[in-house]
Image (cartoon, rainbow, N blue to C red; front, side, top):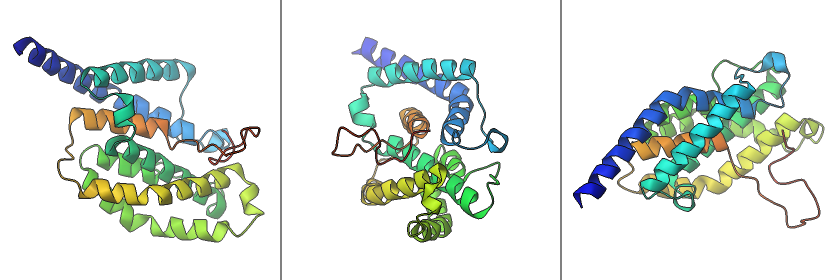
Length: 220
């Protein structure tokens, strides 16, 4: 029993160290991913092949450590922290689409989803409350843009609309999770949040398997 306990403590310590050390790298890679469809001069989160390769290795290591902690991907990918990270990424997509549509493509240094993500690393409830106060103008913009087919021709704007659609579908699940007790800002919570933010919202395959498009919009 003591040996097993010691191993769990060691796994937790390693997970904490890896998450703290590589959080900035994974955060930057996540920002780069959602901005790939933008002109290079407007991208605020830039990365390179070396960083991408390092990030992939870190993700693999974190996944192994979570597994050793009893958190398989089948568990954490359907749990609150990972999905909160996905929500933050989807919010980044919406913010980018809004900027392309309403600000002539001028992208701020800090996207709303990224700001919420930073807060969520410390306090998920505070982060969600903050986003609730800021998201309404973007939701209103999406509702307007969905009726303008000419605007929907832009890939970045189209992805923003799909991101909002996914967030709407997830709303009830997030509400249920927030009402649960025991959601702690643990080391595994932070790691799973990081993985969710890097992963982004999932592709939703259409029923017609013969078509390559999907409900996420055009691939970046």
